Amino acid sequence: MESDVELLARLRAGDESAFVGLVGRYQGSLLRVARTFVPSDAVAEEVVQDTWMGVVRGVDRFEGRSSFKTWLFRILVNRARTSGVREHRHVSVDPTEPAVSPDRFDGSGAWAEPVTPWESDVDDRLVAAAWGPLLREAIDALPDRQRDVVLLRDVEGLPSEDVCDVLGITEGNQRVLLHRGRSRLRTALESELETRGR
Amino acid sequence: MVLLRRRDELVCQQVVELVSDYLEGALPRSERRRFERHLRGCPNCSAYLEQMRVTIATTGRLTPGDLSPEARDEFTELFRSWRADGGTDSGDGGGGAPDGIG
Image 1: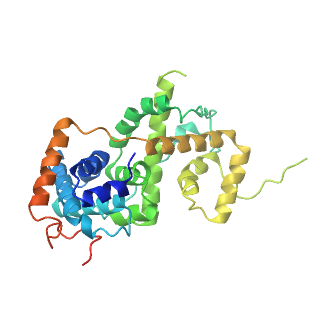
Image 2 (image 1 turned 180 degrees about the vertical axis):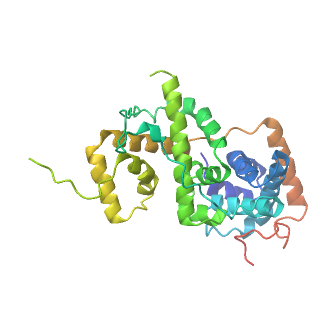
Image 3 (image 1 turned 60 degrees about the vertical axis):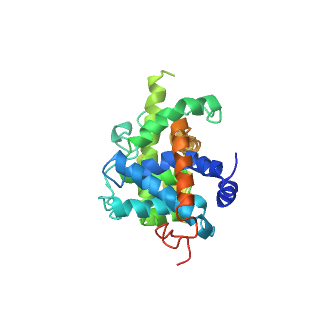
């Protein structure tokens, strides 16, 4: 697969297929993140379209000090903030949300029942393909702030300092949100595996 | 032989709350040692940590859905109009892209 840098080089040269390639790569995540800032899907789509316009018009000024992804999501969040109603900066974290339901532990804080190891077949493409839609659903069901952090950090793979920078949150908050989000995703996968009656 | 019980050993319920900090390399050294000591003696928490690794790895391998042919056409059109209208040199057209100069 062509890298972002290669696509950008072609985009600079005015190649429209490179632009469509980048859109295909990031449209889903951009819409998901935008939607957590604005009140409707329609506004999210406008913000994302506006972001792409910013990319086309600003690509010659992009100096590569950050990755393309970080630049892209920074543009998105800036635009979303100006059209959104939600003030994203204020992050309150619910300190009471446990990673694992308390009833899974005994009185001493040890696991009440053994934890079933998952088969190490995650690299099996079939397994990943089967889990993909389920994970997408679980990500979409996350609370907004957890979803933003999981999308940027784990789906898009931004470094944590870039995630903090883009979202305007502290390292500490970012880690808590990431922890909550990942824990929920694990729980979703676990229940699916149990439902399938392994 | 009696193993000395160290003070402040972590219990499983605490370990699951430290997993992300551990994986992000954000635990202070002493905390990290306590965490790893617990793991060595606890197959359940080891399995849990592995589940979290699998969760994160699988999340990182999600692939974007394909654009519909209509969306491809729409963005191709938009691209042409943005290039035609203002081009890439317009000083304010991009609304001040953050990585740009000034």
